[in-house]
Image (tube, rainbow, N blue to C red; front, side, top):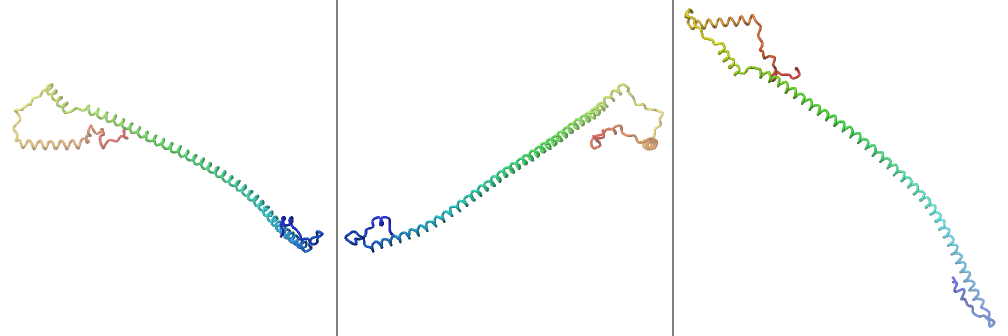
Length: 222
């Protein structure tokens, strides 16, 4: 295949002295030119085909690019929607959790206040009961203090002996009785008098039976 420079610099041999060229050289050159042009035409056809293929591929790539771009945009929209929805759900969950926590805190505070009130009420009831017990026992102690003591009894006895002195009287007209007979008579007399007293009169209650102490005392009865 001829090049541009070879075509420009071609030289033919002289055929005659008049300046003509040899026909075989010209024919050979023409053949070479034809071969070159045919080769160039074939290469041009191949290049045009390749260009068409490349153009088709470029169009396909552009179409794919558009599809990918649209897919990316759709994916971005879906992603943005998912993120937005997730944020809204998270915010809703947080609000609900905060609301439940606030409600639980309020209930806990109410229960704590109620338990404190119950405890304080028990303390108040215990203090009131303590004061009542102290008052009641103070009354009992005051009543007990009003009873005469042993020293009071001895003092009263001394005062009575001084105020009303007595002397033992011995009767000379009483006959002497044996001591054993006197003891027997006294025993019989005492037994008979006790029996008659028990049969004729009901059992006398103690004057201290109305007092309540120790295990016999019931606070709720007063």
